[in-house]
Length: 185
Image (cartoon, rainbow, N blue to C red):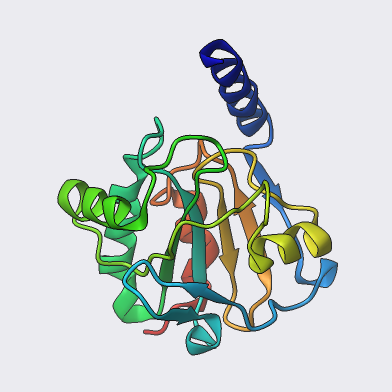
């Protein structure tokens, strides 16, 4: 069982490296419909509340080799949140690297990375009962996270601007350049 899971994880990681970046145009599926996510703090995170702002959505996992990217996500939230950027973490166990309940995830992220950015409850992003946002991305843009820490930038009108794989750090120049035109002064 362990070898099988390790092999699956290894194959998924290789796929993530190969598919580390995809550009998507708004014409491939238009704007994001109004989706909401269950908040890790209770309540709901409604994407319509972020209309007019760029949103970087990242599927996360607490036990992944890419987990330190949470630090970069939080840094973007602190630096660019006041200028309009929303950084949304969507924890998922689809790649078998997330803690088993939302309370543990929240505690882990707060203690280890000082996370204050918006965070959904644990959802499915690529397997099983996939969250409607990720199902929409796949259906309209052909994008599904190949591994943890896949990134999707939405423009202020809800259009998919670009996607990146796990290897691209949230604070990379590539991602900064993609959201910079959408920030307020």
